[in-house]
Length: 139
Image (tube, rainbow, N blue to C red; front, side):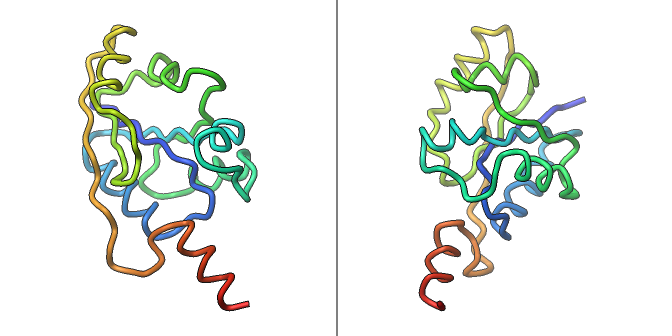
């Protein structure tokens, strides 16, 4: 059984998220999605609008997702020990170093592959910040 791990903030769900998770699910037999903690999201980007408990519940309800869990506080790579993925799916805009992910997996006894998912481009609603910007201009 091939386990795929995808991660993200998933603040305002949009078609780009659905594309990312659908494509990630195609890579294996089960898709685990790690939803970033509020504190981690704030440290890496910005404080989400939607609280973490609601975001993880919403992601868990999506058809491609077999299991959604909240991420860990502290070292984000510790989640690899919990999920033990065969594949880590990255979004086109996730600025993680592929070699670093592979090495962090090896440190934890996990031999994994990293696959980058293509950008969703079938709609203007393909990014949280774009949606927020559109909402501001319409009000």
